[in-house]
Amino acid sequence: MAGVILGVESTAHTLSLGFVGEDGTLFSSESALFKPEEGGIHPREAADHHSIKAPELISRLLSREDFNQDDVVAVSFSQGPGLGPCLRIGASVARSLSSVWDVPLIGVNHCVAHIEIGRNQTGCEDPVLLYASGGNTQVIARAGDKYRVIGETLDIGIGNMLDKFARQHDIPFPGGPVIEKLSSDWKNRGLDTNENLINLPYGVHGTDLAFSGLLTSAISHSRELPLDQVCYSLQEHSFSSCIEVAERAMAHTGKRELLLGGGVACNARLREMSRIMCEERGGEAFWPEKQYCIDNGTMIAELGRKELQSGRITKLSDSAIDPSMRTDSSIITWN
Ligand code: AMP
Ligand code: MG
Image 1 (cartoon, protein in one colour):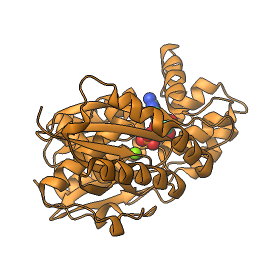
Image 2: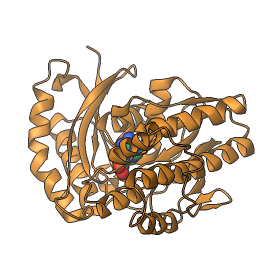
Image 3: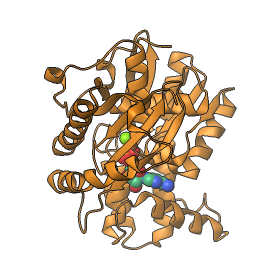
């Protein structure tokens, strides 16, 4: 087989190793998800999890029939943004592998990787990305040689908001899929969902978003109203606000493709809303398979591939992690 690029992801709860062929063929990742016993993700505990799991993931990768370490031509890793202690583990794994295999190291931007894996998988060309994940909620579009952040959350990420709501009801991390299930239970009850939609705060400020007021209000309603009804209303409000901002970004930029990325993009209702909005304005909505919506090493490998083919590699002395790396700090040289 021709060469492959290995990608290492470790920005938050997931440590993941994945790879792509030099021609852009994607291969599934080997991943380990840190699930806190209680509370949210403590960065150091997540980092400990990653360092314990790293050898096992590497062995799993090496034992795969579709992977041969002699084929690796470069190792890329998430250099930021993310939780510092977690990023450091992934960076160490990547530095070690690149040194053992004597191949270039490439530090990449995690948010940009969500765009590039989505473009690779769906064939969309110049999308507005709605990046809806645990820690991030951004609407991003390319202008010239950068992916620009057109709007973003001013407080917490949408997934983080869903997880916090779930935690109040003893639903373990990740809460998003359970909230999705409860929402469809409510819908399937056959009641008039519009009439029974609880009025919650709606946090759109131009092209920016906010979710903490919505979270507080939903928690307070859930003390009196059925949980599935609150979950339904929570999804409708938070997803509508994302779709509104995404639509505004499409209108401002004149782009007609919407791409979803991030763990929350696994949600069928968010996908449906995206599809409807795009159809109404003569555009088209895209989303990658679930395994490539959540954080994964393959997307880091895919961005590494594009950087490598543009001639950019990272010197060891420049490979320090950057927890607050911005989406628009990366220069995009490819089409
Ligand atoms: P990420 O940070 O991109 O890896 O995604 C993790 C986040 O996605 C967590 O906050 C999850 O609760 C959320 N998530 C995963 N699946 C779903 C889903 N089906 N609906 C809503 N949120 C989800
Ligand atoms: Mg992510």
